[in-house]
Length: 397
Image 1 (cartoon, rainbow, N blue to C red):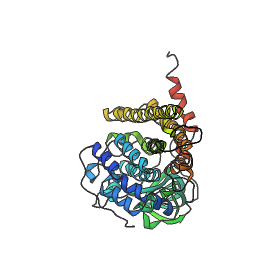
Image 2 (image 1 turned 90 degrees about the vertical axis):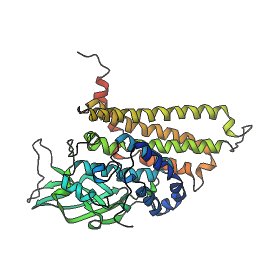
Image 3 (image 1 turned 120 degrees about the horizontal axis):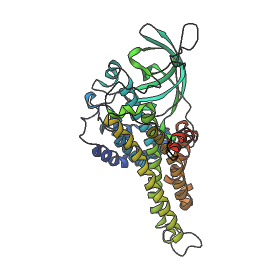
Image 4 (image 1 turned 60 degrees about the horizontal axis):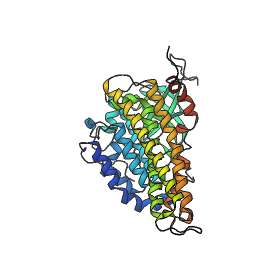
């Protein structure tokens, strides 16, 4: 795999990028089985994503990127996940970590990654699981990292770390918390360890990797929990969580959409004992289908409305409110359960068509089951979001 990939000139509007994502679905579908066998998205799919400029949706046009909004980027992720959950997931990891890098690295670092003809594709773990010691001009970083989704084709890899002093003590910031940083390093400076052998999201290439005594210049490191972007564009004002977490929602939407499409086709020809004609003629099937389809429509509307509302506030120059941030966490976690319910409905009605390999419905069920287990969308996030949302229902003093 080449470590740098050229891209075309930016398109003018968000709809064109959504259309591009939809247009490469045949390539993704044709490669789906090979991607599962290889446990990563294939070169043909990577090239299609690059040729259409999709990896750089959140990179400003100043650097030759698309300069798109978060909502447009979410819709692109949904289209790709509709074709294949693993592709949508790996792409989300690439495009959204790229958005974080360009929005929060300093100007020198952003220019190093994105200012040339070949734009960085980033991936990797940004949570502070490694350790780094301050040295002249940067840090010496060591650490072992897991779940580097999309790392097989990434040119720069993220490595989060806690900063330690020369005596081995964590450096404490003014707010009493350890100082944590995220480094972005060229892929050939880390060691890939494999380790991705799972039941779902099989083709995301979420490999383990390690960094050993790796020098990271200041320009290639950023605050892990910063809420103040370097760039002026509104999307970056949503912060690392607003950008990094939100992409999980359209992956779930895309998988659920594909499951409904598959069962709708299967039901037109599938027969079962006790049914006078095909199951698609059954009133019970039709009632369950439209109920689940309504859930998908409602979930999709809330996902995009919540993100559009927060992004509009940032665009206006105002601060994104605590309620808006809470709702982003709420909807991104909640939609995982909705998608699981929809996919399970489709899988159950698929019968033998669901359990045979290869099976799109089988893959949908495995992918949403694994995707919904991610740390960033685990149920405790709903508990964390609840005080702010609940307060809006209480009488105001």
